[in-house]
Length: 147
Length: 163
Image (cartoon, rainbow over the protein chains, first blue to last red):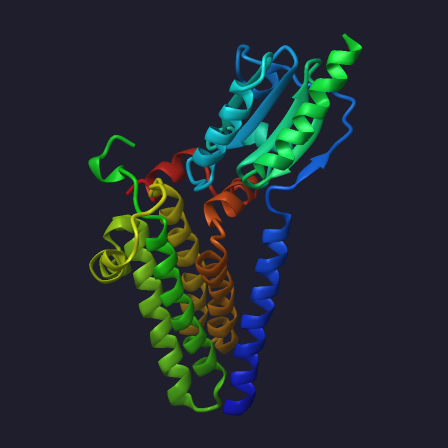
């Protein structure tokens, strides 16, 4: 390969990687609404209890996740400000079965469960706080009306 | 987790180091694509050096990486204090992933597989560039994928990553 062609390959690689990064960043932390018939129980993720009466912010973390501590603070704050909402953080470092069951491929991944335990939303990456708060309040509103 | 050096690190340190690594990997790729034997040899040697630096970061921990010292002594004094400190385990894991990629490239290069050098340098470049520019966290994105694939077992993880 000539030096010019080699330089072109290098420039193309930088451009492609930049595009990849922009795409990745645009998807990170988005709140996706999900419809799941199955209900999640505390035992499914290896805890005894601690789920909220009205909603649960179920966070999956590992030891090698740089954004999990910040996410923990955001979710803890959102849960703390609302009655009947709990934040539960599950460490998947040594729990590959739980990761597989909920198809968690990146951390943090957050599931928003309603009072019954149905998965109502899913966030891959550090959640965008305002977007998540809106979705959470929407779910809480529905529950309130139903009850 | 109880070791004293497991305290938080400035998250900008590993990103600074990843930037240097990304530039070195680009030079490696460029040299490996040139037709002359001398350039290919230089690319191979450079990839070995980069792999050794990843090995340093993996086994000594990101806090003792030479780029980390460079950052601490030359760059950080010129910056405002970090907004928050980070656990060193995720960037140390990222060093391990870098070691895997460049290690395969070195092994292929040593076996006479010329494309192995630029291909695996390119994989490592993508990871290092995303890490540096976009704050992409390899530990967040890759750890569970590797665990899924059965490449990281419970026992192995403790040995290789908490060195």
